[in-house]
Length: 465
Image 1 (cartoon, one colour):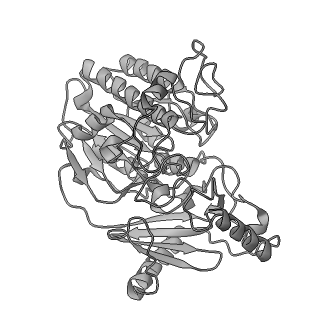
Image 2: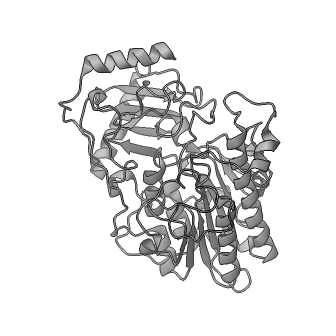
Image 3: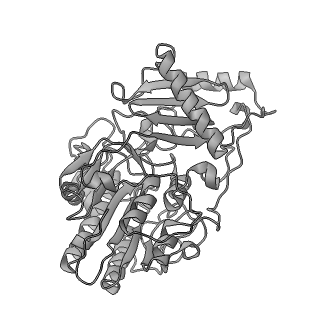
């Protein structure tokens, strides 16, 4: 894709805003009638909205590792947060694949590519894939380490995260991170820069500013979207994105800046429903992996445009590589795809998207998670989507589930027995991919597994639903 020259720069600034645990429908432009996001609605109207955007994993660390590396989970081994043996050991039939906590130093990251191609890089907020992002290509880090949340009471200063100085008592973390990001933009306005703004919001603990909570108290609610404290956190993110966009306008940088706004995984269903999507964070049903996504780049991306082409956050790396004509190592491998043809309304060939999660994640709340069973958000398996078809494969018992997302976005009607030809094609596709990427498929029986205990626990949970 040709690069348009703006003033002194020929390479666009890259601004990547990654909100933590923000659900697919937790925004006005995505259909929420409860949350208020005027600045993000405006941003959506100025760029392209991707209605079928996905995180490469259903929870924080693996999604971020995939996005920053451009590689799927088998390439780096970050499958979950902490250990892969989650939930009661008596309810796990197999021994899951061990998890890697950190993105390996050998991985060539998006930030490293931009740094090697003349960019100044700053990150402001949650990092979560090693102890210090300066080791992976950033020049400035505020607030980022291996910590996955701000801690109890941690959204207000004094803070409990690393690499940040406390502000005045009661300062709000989302505001502070944006202040730091704005300072970075002003200091680097004459240089190509990469601004990574991974807010800790809207991850738990749910803590909004009191004045914003008050604005949502008593507001008519929608099914599963009714928490004023969470709405206040979403509103703070929206306000701060608006502040940042205003600075780009004031500094005459908007036209030469690619802005990407997304979430690292689906929302927590116990906090906010993503209806019609099933389940939430940690699940590989649509509610756990489908995310909001906007890309804005004036003069290069048509304002008010949208697409149903299925994309993943692993696509950011090859897309940015393409638009800046980056020089990269000859042996660089990327699992995503350059999306820049979509910017000029060119068609792209349909491709398969894959997820691999040879691990366990226990349920948050069996009443609300909407997963496969009330004990786990996910059990070890893989998923493939191609076109309207989505296949789940679970390793414990070899079960498959097949859904037509066009007719059934809520994944309620399993067609595995009625669409045998499609099922077999999807199985063949998934197995070929796992072989190609050497994806580990755990099959060793767990000696602690107790079927009677598991069934009693499942029945007990189902009776309480």
